[in-house]
Amino acid sequence: MVSASPNGPASPRGQTLLLDGITQRYGSSLAVDGVTLDIRGGELVALLGPSGCGKTTLLRIIAGFLAQTKGHVMVGGQSVDGLPPNRRSVGIVFQNYALFPHMSVAENVAYGLDARGADRATQRSEAQRMLDLVKLGHLGDRAPRQLSGGQQQRVALARALAVNPSILLLDEPFAALDKNLRLDMQIEVKRIQRLSGITTILVTHDQEEALSMADRVAVLSQGRLEQFSPPTEIYDAPDSLFVNTFVGSANLLGGVLLDCDRSAGRVRLDAGGLIETRAPKGDLRPGARVTVCLRPEHLSVDPAAGDGDTLNGVVEMGLPLGATVVHEIRVGDGTAVKVSEPRIQRADLLAPGTPVRLAPVAPRLASVFAAA
Image 1 (spheres, rainbow, N blue to C red):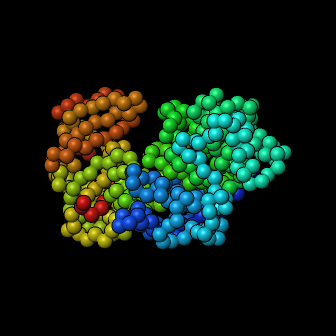
Image 2 (cartoon, rainbow, N blue to C red):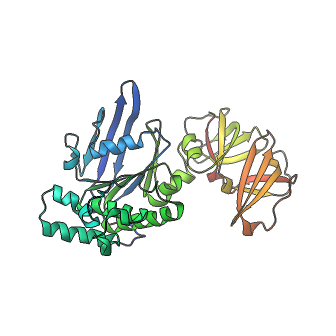
Image 3 (cartoon, rainbow, N blue to C red):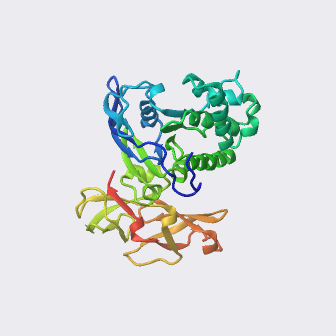
């Protein structure tokens, strides 16, 4: 194993993984459409998207359970397209953990080593080492049914790591856990991944899970790759309207693009007012109909109406949500806009009917796309 800080970058023991133009067809249906991902050794990458977007299909192709229609899978620079699953040096943790009920915890962890012909002494020592890594070294003699859900997940992880894989695949591994245990296990799996330095692919539909755990996130939609970037870029600088609306929440405001350059733009909103934005995505020219996306926390609200060049509205409701305050504000074209602020910033909720002025916290946080 490779030592590293659980919060710092992993020392890459795992191999690089390249998905080169992967396409998968089922008859006339296109499940994956030319996806290319170049994944670094030791990196944790999340495949994120709604049901049916192709993320599980990609995982099955990497594992060798499914032969792609087109494209290549390269591990450490070598093609594995012709190799069966047991020769791809891939470890998998399934959603249901798939532990053998008739075996002890230690025997479950050693199962892959036994299948590869390792001697009994190696099986015992490696199983114990893996169980120690996941902090279950004292439970090797127990049956899986005697463990909690989180403990069973750690056993499944230890079993996957015991065969010293180049790539670790996690298929919705936290879906069966309750919220508090899910967070604990996300932290634990991230710690183990950092310590081992193994290249890891996490399939999930949970945005928070992907953004908090992954070094980079691949957002998929209808079999196509929408964006492959670090979590902060996915959230703050989305490449498409789909990414902006699927990851997190966003207010959508229609308007007309007045002018733009490579760094900024200006939009006249249908709701009234002129707004400065990031440079628009795509080949957009002045006069084009556009959609401006603003996340609730990227808006500021001033309880005083502005002039014709500002976005004005009227407060309809205010909700104190723990550390934050959320106001719903109706703007000029009838659109309901949500604004989220730290509660310490505004001690009192704004009363319904209060006229307000809205503005982006910073122009770079207002994204612009061609109107849908």
